[in-house]
Length: 516
Image (cartoon, rainbow, N blue to C red; front, side):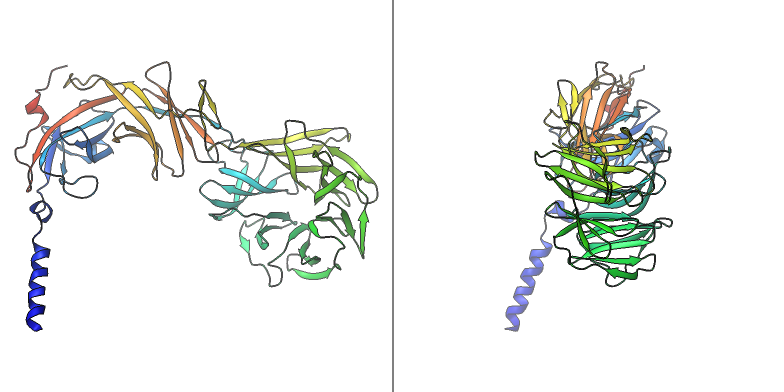
């Protein structure tokens, strides 16, 4: 038995050591030398096999100071490996590349998302819930690009509009989102779990035991109301001190609004109820069902109504005086699905939906109580499938050109190098940019990841193009100018055997430089 084990050991050892020479022996590095055809720009250099296939990206947008500088030009080394990390087969290879000059990249526009007004705007994919704050700002429970959830504060009256309160990764969007604010705290209800953030410090604070779960939430001043198992519980803020609770309402409740005194609720069947010391139903139009209620000034409240014909409207109501005003969306405005009111002005934020569109409007009742004033109007159009139709950008179902031809500058050292190049728009985990058609990187447009779709459109002037990139939140448009500031060069051929280079041959030896 011992002899059998020894034989098996020797056979295994022979199997392990008897590797092909190309895998066992590491090649000596190959030095690649070249004279750049221009003294400005970046260098991208690739290794190509005898069929012209790119087998290794050696230098990706390198500045000149990354190369070794010698009397005969610039140099770098190649270890004989391909893009897969394995040695390339013996054969003849060629080092070729491009010097990319001063290509101008300028941001032109943001399409299909009105929330993104500038570079510092959060990239809101959807505004799940909104709540006006005292003074006119609006708090937004938003989903951001990159699968992030966040609470952000929007100030429509000032130029520096945005401040972020809480943000965290959320791979899956919450199915139900509720939002309420007191004088100092924000309350976010995500799929029944209550979370709290301080409005001043913008930091999340712990939720006391017994208040973490709920079906709906409302707050104003120093009071909190939380719907739990058909009962509305009341608390004093900021310490969550108990302030009583209601009995079970005759109807299944879905929405709450704290009044100056008491609470108003909307039930699943569309009825409206008020609690002070007992439940009392509030009369509403017989053909309207109330889906959402929200606090207003004093004892007023806002109600989102759905009519028998399927239309929707927003109504400002008083439990005693009845309907005070209403706003009806236009035929092209979409269907209202949520309303959130302010407690210090006749101002509310309404969310509307339409085919592939989410719209959020802030409206204020005019001082003369006649009509409404739009404070802001933001629209997000689904654009993950954007494209080009009849020469115009569209949010979906268009062509997606990803390649364009550009004319190259003459290489004064080698006029025989190509004068035309096909560039391709690409996106990957490191960002977006332009490459050659076979994948050699030329120009970085954006360093951020998350862009799922890119497009390049050549303009009538051969030296410029439009570059589009979309991440689900919007489509960004850039202008690429001076695309002709690219020169190709040939750094010579390399013949490899299993140990390394056979006979160095520089580009200068193959094609003597031609004076400009």
